[in-house]
Image 1 (cartoon, rainbow, N blue to C red):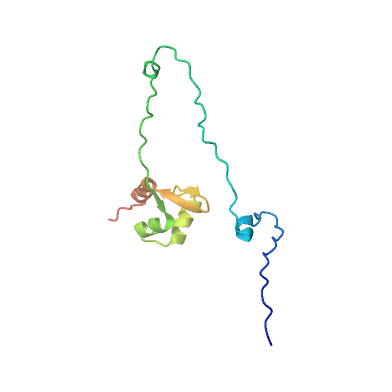
Image 2 (image 1 turned 135 degrees about the horizontal axis):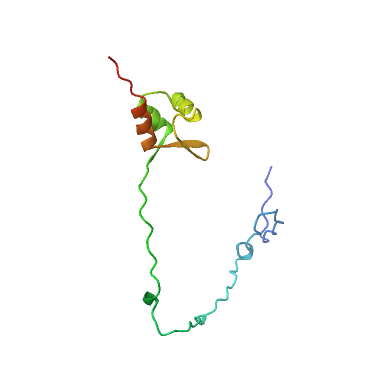
Length: 125
């Protein structure tokens, strides 16, 4: 029994489905498509000059630097407080610990953890 041999004729292009690009004809025929590119550069628009430089105008002031706040994940907060993640979630949902929702997870500002721990201390004696 022998297998059918492939024909030496070029393969026909398949119809494309929605969202797919058609086959490149160069792959089928072996001819590269020509690309026409403009050699001349576009003229640059000319701005009118008013006789004074840009530095003479009002200066843009930089905004005051913001204090950097580092955020901790629930896992990191649980490790710092030495409790389970579920306990941290209960504190967040109960409003005892401030948190920010980012997507589907929570981020807790580091100062909020320090404030919670400072307020949770009890004196024994």
